[in-house]
Image (cartoon, rainbow, N blue to C red; front, side, top):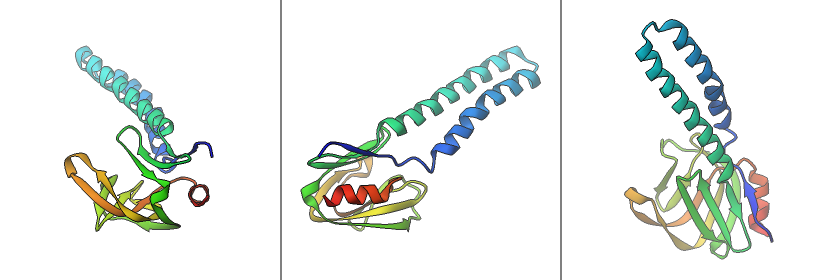
Length: 162
């Protein structure tokens, strides 16, 4: 089985595009409304940096997608994190929307690794053995369940059940 990629950014991508399109309009308005050259120059630099960061975020969300290969499920969020879960450790895969109250993109709640997009998940994995997940400053945790979001939950479930 070859690598299959699954996006997860369809919910946030439109907002990033709106801000990317609005940024040049903002720069133009600043040029027209602000009378001080030094302030216009500073705001122009900040506006250009903002546009670059938005474009970079869009690219990162597209470049670093979830993937399934012959041995692992790789869950990602841009370059912020990447977790590799052996397919042999996955006992069951289910599809279903869940809402999370936590504002964090990733967290561990009662032994469940939760990777949300817009406070939601749509795929759940039950693991047959605990997996050690390192959340950086939030510490390492043993998890027995994983909940995450993908733009194609049907395709993800099919890929994981093979």
